[in-house]
Image (cartoon, rainbow, N blue to C red; front, side, top):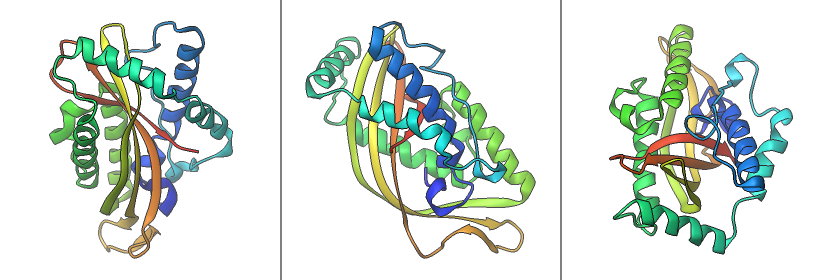
Length: 223
């Protein structure tokens, strides 16, 4: 979400390693068309700049591989047709709007330190990792603020069906204010209250073919 660019302890940084797991599994899936590994499309492992992580170069190659191998128009259309076939009522044209609503709801829950309102929108492993890192923020007495979010682009970039579940990846390009303050004093410790930062991410949503809602299962940074 906005963390890596403002230097704060944000959700984007927390999901740094999520891109690695997603990229590796996605590469293998495209290479041999075998089942998507893991309970939700690849085990998400989180990292954070608050613990010396940040956007390290050791992870960059994996992320770039996944972005470069995004499907072309024909592959995307086939994938969307697969999803529509098992998800009656699925509308590829309207899904970016639905995904953007989930995007804002998750961002708001993160900023309020309360994931309960979006519990059903997060895959279990993602929810557990989000909660773990929110607890770290609380223990350190810090609050990560995400404000003035302006989404400039929201579009479907990949879709497929595997193991009775539909997956759709949305490309988000947005600007926002992302900064971290001390809970007690309100003193700025990272990021900027005045200068917006840009972020570009790929959010992958999953939904069992008999399920009632989409859930966020992976986030990958672009570039």
